[in-house]
Image (cartoon, helix red, strand yellow):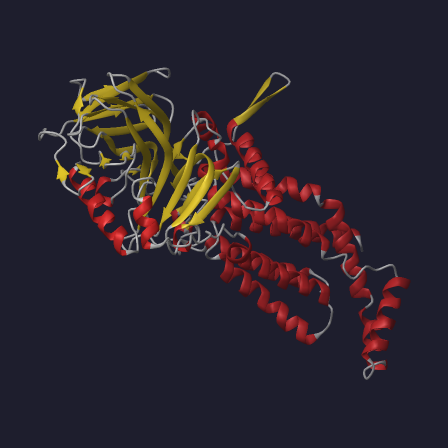
Length: 575
C-alpha cells in the first residue's frame, strides 16, 4: 500500500470525524445593538416588548408582562393589572385521530398535549412522543400578545368559554375535521374568539383569531405569538435543537446553544419554529407573512423561546371584527407531512447545508424508500423489503457495481506497484542522500511502466461524498429512527435502531476485522514504518465507528466484504 493511499485514508478519517463539527455549520445570529433607555421608553407603546430585557426601563416592562402571562390579565397604561374574566373551571377536550392524540384546555385556549401515535420515545416503548409536554414548559397553539398604546394584553391564562360540551372528539375518517371554538372577553371590552381546526390525517392545526371591539373607540394593536420548547443537552452527537425560520425565502437556523443574547430577524417570515432532529413545531403564515422574529436567549432550565411579531391589526368599533389566520405544525420531519402543511414548510427537511450533499442525501433516501415500499415493473408488482437494513445492503451492492471498473483498475495498479517494489528499493539505495533525484527517478519509473500512484486512491475518494451523504440521511431521516435490521440475541447481534450505534458493537468489530483482512490481501509498499501505521488504521476506524449509526457501519462493513470478494477475484485473474 503506497504513501498516497495512506494519505487518502488519513484524509478520509479527518473528513468523517470533522465534518459535523467544522462543516455542518449553522447560521450565527447577528447581535442586535441594545437601544438606550430613552429609546426603550419611546418604543414601549409602538412595539411588542421582549420577555427578557436588560435595561432598567425594560425590567419594569418584563415584570408587568410576567404578571400578565401568569394571570391572564390586561395591563393598563398606568401599570395596574385588572382581571379579564371571572374564575372559570378548567375544561379539557381530547381529540383522537389515527396519527395523533391532542388535548386542549379552555385556560388560555391552547393545546396542552400533542402525542404522535406513530412514534414512541424509546424502541417498542409504551410512551408516545409528545410535542407539547405541559410539565416541561412547552407551548403550542400559542398565546396571543397584543400591545396597544395604553395596554398590553396576553391570554396565556385567560379563562375562555367553550362552545361545545364534548369532552372527546374522534376523527376516524381520512377527511374528518373538527373546529373547536373558544370565546373570551378582556376587562377593556376586547372580545377574543379562537378557532382550532383539527384534521384527521394532517399534523397541521388551522388557527383563527377573531377580535371584536365592544368599546366605543377603535383599537390598534401589534400582535405577537410566543412559542416555547424545552430541550435536553444537545451536546449529543445526533441531536439538533434549533430555531428555524424561512426568512425572505432563505432557511435560517440557529442552534439553541449558539444564541447568546436576544436577537432579531426582520423580513418576510413564511414560517418560524423550534425543532430537533426528527420533529418540529412551527407557526405557518401562508395568508400573510410575519414581519419579525425575536430569538430569546435560552433559559438555564433549558427552555428556548421565540417571539413572532406578526404585525399590526386594526379593530373597528360597532361590533365589527378582525380575523387573523395562521397554521400550526406539530409533527415529524417527513417530506409528505411537511408539504401537506403548506407554507413552504417542506424546506424544513434539510440533511446538509451544502447543496450537493443535501441533494445526494435526498436521492439516497428516495432510493431507500423506493426499495423499502416496493414498486411496479411492466405490470408486475415487486414487493418491498420492509427492512431498511436490507435496503442499505442493496444500496451498497449497487454502488459497488457502479464502481467495479474503477475499483478493478485501482487493484491492478496496486498490483503493478507491488511488482515495482524491488526497483523502487534500488532507487532509494542509489539516491538515499538526494531526495529530489529520488522523487524524479521514481516518477520516471512510474511513467515508463504506466503506473498511476494516485490510481488506487480514486475509488475511496469518490465514495467519501456518498458516505457523508448517507451519514446525514441516517442522522436526520425519521424513517430510519427506530428502524430495526436484525436481532439474534444468542450471538449479540441485535440492531433495532439503524440511526443509533450498535449496542453490542458487533458490526464495528466485524468491520475492523474486514479491514485487517483487506490489508493482508492488499499489495504492500514494503516500507516498515508504513506497515506499522497501516496496522493502526483498523483500530482507529473501529474506535470511530463504535459511535456511528449502525446503518452507516453496516454500509461500510458490506462494502468491505464486497471489496474483499473483488480482490480475491482480481488476484485469481492476474495469475
